[in-house]
Length: 133
Image 1 (tube, rainbow, N blue to C red):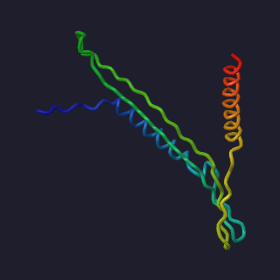
Image 2: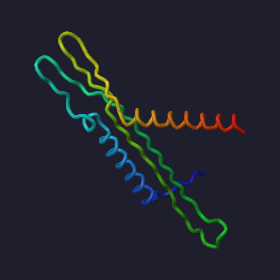
Image 3: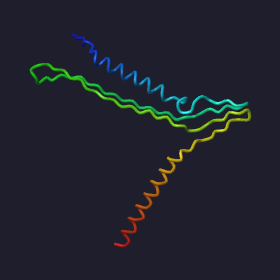
Image 4: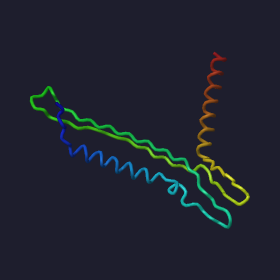
């Protein structure tokens, strides 16, 4: 015999709210929000190219305290989301052909250079310390 579990309005409202947030986040991570609309000038069209990534996770649990005299129920849950959109390049479409102009993130390059410099100084100092011990 299967027993049908009654719907819990709290769980249903929580899930509906999660999916509403998911839809809002998904619509916000569009290329239009990174660049805007393609630009037409003369015979050429400039089309933006972006990298968009999304991650969503949710967990929800319902339980009862079986050791207590009363069958008290509990509800818990949580979630996380990450939406990242960044410009990558511009494609210029002309009658002669297509030119792709990459967008270089100078901050990212600077960070990588500083991390490499710190790594090199660490290993140089470690080597010198071992040599002069």
